[in-house]
Each structure stands twice: as structure tokens, then as C-alpha cells.
Length: 351
Image (cartoon, rainbow, N blue to C red; front, side, top):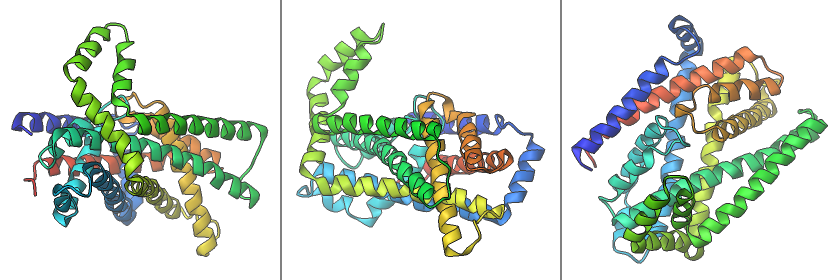
């Protein structure tokens, strides 16, 4: 990647940090009070994301290896620990850039393509990044889908309420996920790039650009779609390994909410059973919040959406809105810290 492009991505991320700092719904005095309240719990809250990003990096590497092909000489390099740490760095930086951009947070994908093109050819780099982005969203739907059954299990255990309104919402989410599974399965079987460009061409004013772009890059686009479809058909092990890793990254992510609930003394009586129930509550909180945030994902850094999601989901569990505000603020602080880490890693010499 050229130094100019690197600097553009770098300053975009730095601007995001500044915007996030000045868009808190509380004063800096209140913000500092919340941070002090978190105290040493900030260490595991921030630290758990080293594991989350590690699982994300492993999921992406599985896709890259499956996409390039195990018979390729290059795959030996892709299996090395050196390459994993490079992917780990690009994972953190890519997500840091995603926090800065609207439209579902796609700012990190061009950066990843440009950087990954140094290791493999550009077509495979592009298809690998697209495949991983698809897998990231695909795993979201599985997380939401399975969370419905976690909720129902807690209902059966007498821990959660159920009503006609709640049952209706759960049914809508199930249908929503099943429709998404169908769309993703078609995308994985047939490729997605040309189809998406066709949809873009239906937007007023973009039909000419879409048509010209497809004509100029017809062979490349066809090859990328073929590579996307090939992974699903020919290397199911890589596909499902990536899916499982991505799913469990969200389960691990839920631990940060668990830590904050424990900080407030919410442990459902303590002991193994109490902590397990609290962890399941944390998974439900993260599931509802991410669903809410992704439905309104066009907002830069999802400002206000994530906060509202935490407050609503925590209130739905019968906990105070003040706790929801605390959780949302500490999560936003964690995001700023990891954006800063991601931006710093952009300036670290490639290894």
C-alpha cells in the first residue's frame, strides 16, 4: 500500500477517535467517574478482545487458506505463525477502520484487500476479504438465531418471562434469520459480487457506472465470484471452521458484559449456576444490541444506536437503565482504545 493511502486510512481512524470522544452523552467528569467505577475491571474488559480478535483472525486465515488452495505453494507461507500475526494485525486495524465508517462499517475492507495483496494475488485477496465479510455477517445471524433458543431455554427454566408480544418478536427474528440463511446460501453457491453490482445499477444515477465497471472488469469479477462459490463447494472444512470460530468470537465477546454485571454484583446468587445464568444473560444482551445496531448500521460508528440497544436489552432483563448506560459507555471507551491500537498498528512495519 502506498504511503499516501496508508496516511488517509490512518487519519480517518484518528478522526473517528476524536468524534467518539466528543459525542458521549455524558460530560467528561461523568465519563471519568464511570471509568473509575470500572476500575481494574477495565483490564479484562479490554483484554478479552485480544481473544475475540484472535478468533476473528483464525476465521479469516481459514478462509484465505481454503480460498487459495492447499495444493498451492503459497499455502505453506499462509500456514506459518508469521502470517497469522500479520492477519491478526490486519484484523485489528480493519475493525478499527470499520468503527469509523457508515453503511455497516465497511471502511476496513479496502485496506485489508490492499494489504493482503502483498501476500497473494489481488483476485484471491479480494475474494478472501469479501468471503470473510460475508462470514462475519453470516455468523451474526447464527448468533441471533441461537440466542432465541437460549432465551426459550431460560423461559423453560423459569428465569425469563414470555408473553404474546415477546413470542411475536422472537418469531419475527427467527423468520428474519431464516430468510438471511437462504440469501447467504445463494451467495455462497453462486458468488455475490456481480449480483451486488447489478443491484447498485438499479440505483438512480449509478446504472451507467455499474454497467461500465462490469464491462471493464468482467473477467476479474467472474473469477472472484467463482472463488467465492468454490470455497463453499470444495472446501467445506475451511468454511465451517471459519463459521464456528466467528460464532464463538461473539460468545467470548459477551464476557465483557458479564464482567460489568459482576462489577455491579449481579451474579444470580453466585456459584457456577449463577455465573452461567449471568453469562447467558450477557449473550442475550449482546445479541439484542448487535441486532439493533446492525439494523440501523448506516450511522457512523453507530452513534447512539449501540447505547440505545444496551439500555433496551438490559432493561428487558429487569435491570436498571443506569446499568445499561454504564455498559454502553464502558464499551464505547473500549472501542476508542482498540481504535487507537489499530491506528498504531497501521504505522508498525509489516512483519
